[in-house]
Image (cartoon, rainbow, N blue to C red):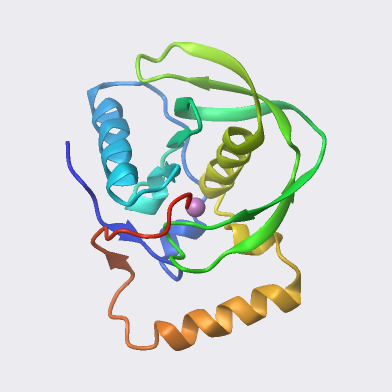
Length: 178
Ligand code: NI
């Protein structure tokens, strides 16, 4: 297993529509293991494959007691509404309030290619929705008001004006980023 470099805001792969996984093979299992290791090293609660440069529909979540492997995940039911603060390992140090359904029913494959269905609420439900957004090229910033988004983006541009390239080795960031 390896801790992989993270792709940060501006990296084109974060805006890619990720491809479905057609076979859950050893390569996918290695990716899942690397995603967990990278997520834990970065102290996140979720990580999608395109955040490490791989545009395939694979993500992991470990929020509260839920440790989930998400291969080809989809939400088949959603209800309620809750607003909560979100961050993202690809947009370190920026946070914003995002309103999402607070109860979902998730269908996905696990690392063995076995389909499962799970009802989730609270933080795990939020994290899964955030990760599925990643697989569709959507970032939490896209859910914010134009005003709030522009404010965060101008801060980001100022703080990252000297960045070279779009990837970073993992460093510790605030807990509960996804
Ligand atoms: Ni994220």
